[in-house]
Image (cartoon, rainbow, N blue to C red):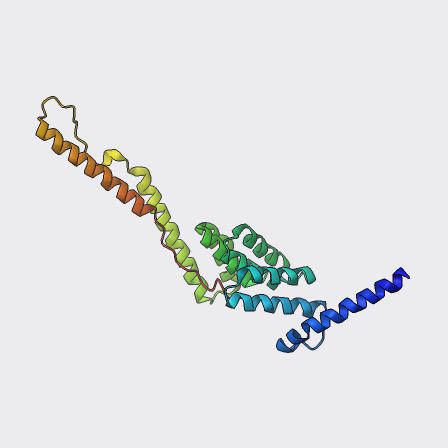
Length: 224
């Protein structure tokens, strides 16, 4: 009795799935519904969501695709793109690494891994763990060469800022002793104005150098 009920329920669920996805099957050119094709439908739904910046829905769609077919590197790589857009960098890196584990020759997984590290400001990791490995798989990829140049430029700017920051201190600007007994009241007022100017100027320069300009790195939204 229970076996018969189980068969009936399973059959009804199967019919429901076919009806629910019949429109999607036609839209995406899928003729036969099986687990692999169903996973691909969810991937394509995720791709559509990415185009309209519906990143949370894209993540859910790719997650379903992965649940149905967990050995597809593309699904992980695409979800990493959505995670990156929502600044879930830890999850994005994990998905890139999983994609690489499934397919070590998947160039886009390395490229995306580099983009995630770049978005975090980890420019050295972006170069060595991502972009350069992608370039090794396709030495003629000009966009990847530009990505490496951009990351190297950021790395150089970062090192220069750190170098200037460590060498600069408040003594870089002349300070005047307000307690000098030889100074008149007028001298002290002038000295106080100069010291205050130097203090403010130092603060402004330090603040301006702490700002990091944003620069996009190649095809972060490009998905398969």
